[in-house]
Length: 107
Image 1 (cartoon, rainbow, N blue to C red):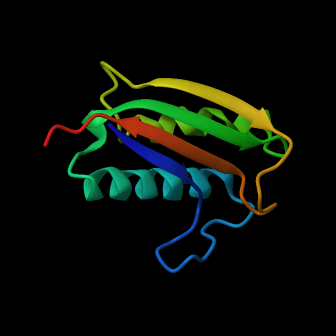
Image 2: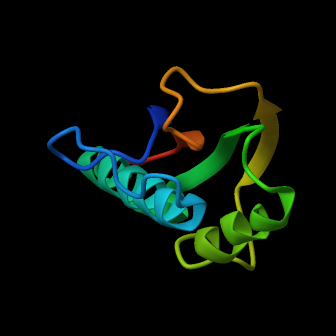
């Protein structure tokens, strides 16, 4: 089992991607998740659980973008289980979403 810590909208150099742009931040988060699961020897088919933490400042109408972007990465016929939680804010106020994951990778 691979436990991937919460990923936020930062690039490899630690720079914020998509300031004030929820869709861009979600895209970066999924790219970071992809890179993490690949580093562990797997791919998104191995992800069995996703936990989403979304800042309450995000317009609820934008939340549909999460599924739209997620569906570009996961097996939509058998998607990972998930939990979506709205929180007051994340550690850094410029972060709009954080996602952690669990994957099962066979070695």
